[in-house]
Amino acid sequence: MTISTTKKLLGATIAAGVVFALAGCGAAPEESGSDGEAATPDFLPCIVSDEGGFDDKSFNQLSFEGATQAAEELGVELKDVQSNAETEYGPNITNLVDENCNAIVSVGFALSAATVEAATANPDVDFILVDDAADNDFDGTKDAENVKPLLYDTAQAAFLAGYLAAGYSETGKVGTFGGREFPTVTIFMDGFKQGVDYYNEAKSADVEVVGWDGTTGSFTGGFEANQDAKQVAVNILDQGVDVIFPVGGPIYQSAQQAIKESGKDIALIGADADLFETDPSTSDIVLTSVLKAMDLSTYEAVLSSGNGEFDPEAYVGTLENEGVGIADLHEFADKVDSDLQDELTQLRQDIIDGNVTVTSYLSE
Image (tube, rainbow, N blue to C red; front, side, top):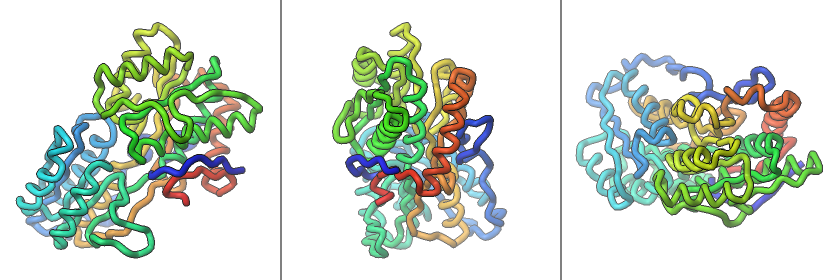
């Protein structure tokens, strides 16, 4: 059975009938047979964030953790630079090149153009770009041969979260909103809606998605937890949703505040990292989280560069390779019907086996 919506750019463990994954894919990354001896003594790995910063409890933080672990195993120091605004992306990358970084991790879709430009001008530097395909057309042709894209088909995991949300909802309305209308944001929203649509078809239900119709929806205009983000969340909550899925790093904090001020029983779904683990203050409201194993993929890419084994081929995280997943239900495990949990387990396998198709720019 196939559910299809407008195409957008874009580790699971099964226990107690729940599909879940820890933020690091459920297990510590293997060391790939390396203890750091293959790294050159003067190897300098570097990383630059987008404007969310490395303490965003989301994709910047996960990428930073992966790069840090690789540097530690290689026995070298990681140099990190945080961006405070979009205008700093290019200069920050240029400064890292000037400081003789051998590998530079650029975190986020928004850094793509600056990364490709720097890579083209500096072919001897290994560039690792998180969350964007850069100039990779997936046909073997690339303008910059030294950029490794790290991509994640999060629509697959968000599909599971959408199905879960639809089955959990008592009001028959669930919501989602994003930071900016970037493909790496809307891919979550696409998958979420597809999951709700699939639930409706399978159950002859009519659960409504507020905030995204497959083509357009609600966005805060940035990735900051501010009043604008809170107002978007409030607007969605006011329409009667009892599950909300913010996509865009720290903006979940604004949704969290809106939920608590509403005084209503509303569940939150996290994005990128397991919010229950990274931000315990959400523990009483977080239903699950849609995960991207950016820590693992960044770790492996930096480690390969340090060992002289850099491979610019694009990495794509999926349910099958545990590059994406959904987190444990934690405190909601007893609140979610066991049959629904079993259905999630089977649905995950059906997606992996190709019996259920989730569409995204990475799957077509």
